[in-house]
Image (cartoon, rainbow, N blue to C red; front, side, top):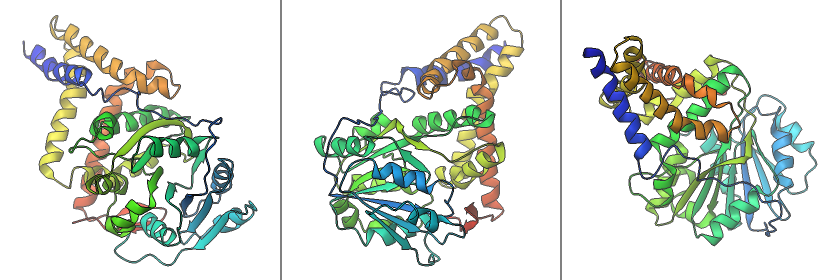
Length: 372
């Protein structure tokens, strides 16, 4: 009988997730490039912060240049120690300005400081914030601009198509996006819910006027999770925001081993929980109930708990398969979601332990102090 009770919490959790009216597990919120869409891009400036991105920056810049005509590109070199500037200038793009970034002040993060320096040179009505590792397929920028203008949003963003080639990428990266959408349901954010404001920082199109009105990137300068905070600032300003998946903004950042993904998660996981031991405890209990207890109940061989655990795994898979299919992965990877979920729980605890030990967040050989 005890084993039967073990299966119930996970079953209830996944049934609730499946039945939520806003369907956070679906992939319906998406936007891909429209190569046939012709829009003037004279009012768009593309800001690309880059730190040691020599391997990918040329591909990114060429992809932006192929979006149309009239857009201005500002590459802000964030104190790179490699050939990022050389590779950028070798592209020979006439609409490219390369800005050598000033040293980062103590109370800023590197990306935001680079973007702020670029923002001060913008004269256009719209700004595209683009990570240096993201390649835009043809028609992506016109599609973003059309979405923002015709539907009257103040900001639209795309969750970049992450690289999913190695074993660890296939195991963990689809779940990264899946869990993000559970935490920040796109549908609620897009319909103006006061409880959810989501954005994906790798590819954001925003009105310059709104960004200036909220105080530029200085209003976000201490944020490690700056994209969702930017969405909140835009929402508080009275403008709408939209976020969606895409296959047209492709990230070429490599996550070939577990350690790289662990460190990525460790940078912000405990920050997501507001450095709260209470929220960490609640998160732990929920993930144990959702992922571990069904496994225990299944292997208990109890005639009641086994079918209930199987039903739990089935519902879990039903909610995860749309994400796997969107990224062209075998739906069989859904069978690994309980293990994947427990790995993310361990990475979250790793993030908390680093914070308690006073270990700073590290990115591109640069450390950032933890927020109070």
